[in-house]
Image (cartoon, rainbow, N blue to C red; front, side, top):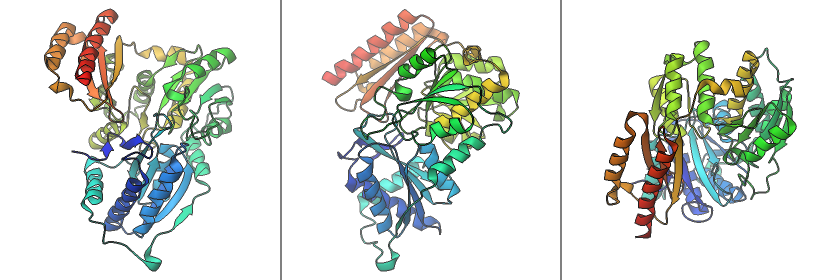
Length: 450
């Protein structure tokens, strides 16, 4: 049983276990212990988003790392993919991100990258937990000149901005584009506007004034309606909405219509196929992606494989099987030829490059795939629930799946980051799948009350 780590690092309400300074310091010590045990260089990057609680956790992590004799490189607020990039470009041994991604400001989290820029595998996270709870590090305390020191990297934002611009085709500019950019009052506020403006775009920026409490609040990738309305109001060419830590992207077209991660994957995969840059002609998506994406990939002459939910599992599959592009419906898009993790800014640049190359608006490009009707409902619970232990639940799912046949599917899973059971039903008849989702949600709610 995992004690700290979920599907995307450690996450919870800030200053309540496990997101306390005590645990953060121990996590820092454990990462430093593993780094010193395996490699010669001893430097760990720490970055964060814009939450008020990041200050205390940043100091606790840095203290833990330094107490084990490893140096810390502080980069301040920077998107999660930016920290992965800085970790590799600085030849650091690990990178730590203090962020709860799309969660509200009172939550926070810790995500860890290895020196190669990829998120830690499950077994290394298990090693960190073992080091913390077994007290194996208690007697290992460097002293005098053997303790580590912390240094601030002042040009981290500039390095990341330059990296982003270099992923855009050298023969193109964005001079004729008007972009509405929603930074979610998060970690991208200091870099994303510069990237698009320096490439020539006219940028109308929204939600780029973080105050420690307004991250993701009615803005960004989770709430793209404001962005879409502004695109229509101004007659802009496209809207880009990032989330709090900048690793996901939701887009709207010139009419203000939302284009989710599945449609963006279809657009990008089609272009990569035509350029013979989609390795093994395969797109990697998760079990949450719409069946319409699978159908579209087959029509394009490619294929789609599915993984468990979580961009880390998408990346693990890509690395293991030699694929180059994948992502999630929620907007995590991973271009492995450019970077090691989901990157909302980079994904936006790839979409803009395709629009430029094709000389087509996004509304036309997004017709590549047609969604199967899909309903996703979240049931917030008061405690952890194993749905398979709910009486008649498994039998009910089997009965409903039989009714859907080959033209639909059901997925019920617990969230890896909050106390929520997610119920997804997909099929050809919208009324029917809504009824099915409600039936399953009712069973979960009854189990929670009992």
